Image (cartoon, rainbow over all chains, first blue to last red):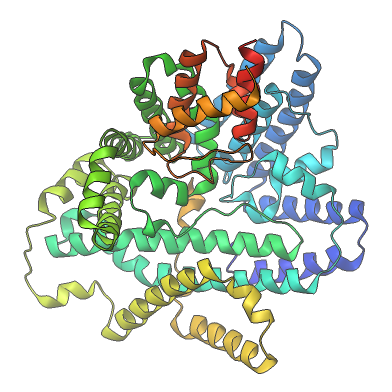
Length: 456
Length: 80
């Protein structure tokens, strides 16, 4: 069930009404659980079997590990449970004919849960709450990857209907739909035209696609995340944010603290920190090694093949370079001043990210190098080819929407826009909502694309 | 060693690793409050602390460190 579909709209209205019909915690959890099973099973019953199996296994493994925390069996129980989870994930990912949707997201949640118990956190003893932590429908397909100890306490709270929370959720949902439909899906067919087979594209088109793809991916994934967070808020949950204005980053290191945060913080806490701690007598070389391991893992988390490994390696190498040359950067910053340094570094970071994303998007390594080779040929046969299949009005609408998105995010970083709307007079609020909905319907590109991250 | 002495020593380690001479630490500070104290510099700081005080922190202890105060406590209890 896609978030942006009629079946989902009906589904959410029914679940929402039933959820708040009684504020009894058992009732609400049962409703959410039934809804999540339906949501997952609607795609494929096998997906549901995987998800329930992994959740049950993790629940039991957590209890067993906790019971043996002082015993000599602890490392065995821990290692074998982790190996089983990773094994199932890798097999499903690479060797099964049917890729179970959401598995990379909920397996990482399961791993973090067991690692935390191994670090002497208490396991959850309510099976229903644990199942919801693993399977809650709004975050099932593409995250955010939640931490048990953020999410489980929320499941113990009482969730009575809160007008402000619910409307804030609806606004976030609408904003996410705007990002997805008006920005990401508008440009998606053009990006596909160039990047699905780069040999059919001209060098100017390749340059355009390389520069615009980060914006498509961002509007798509951050749009999805806003919708997930909005749906969460409607049911009284605070899901983890996944993006914090990544394109204002001054370095690739900073970008990864602002981009797909629930994955990168996961890898920071469970891969980088342990590996760098283990290697710390090697001083900076240990840190560089840990960075490479962490980023290659982030890369291959997305899928099989050299392209994703190289996508991760690219990030790792750039961040090592940044770490090694930090003093030089500070020197340069002092010399040219912040007014020059900041925009320059933002552009540099964006361009490097755009180049790295070709590994993420283009289907094989030799095609990526083909693009690199021809990126700056500046060869144009006919100015028309630059339209990439969109007419002038569509380009203008797309351009304005991108600017609106970045400006809104800028304002929001100083003043919470959703909160602000609640303090406005009714006519101001309703005009704004009306404009947003009209924009989505007039300028949105409907029914073309799945969310990009659904494949991971 | 007292907690205050640990804080003082820690300030000089932070100043050196983060290349910020005028850094002023207090017990409540976390990585969010200190520029350039991130997951990368953190491990350099930890290994510097270990060699300066001749102590060894366990992985779990490193992970559970929440702020500068907790770091000072760890140093005091380990170097006894």
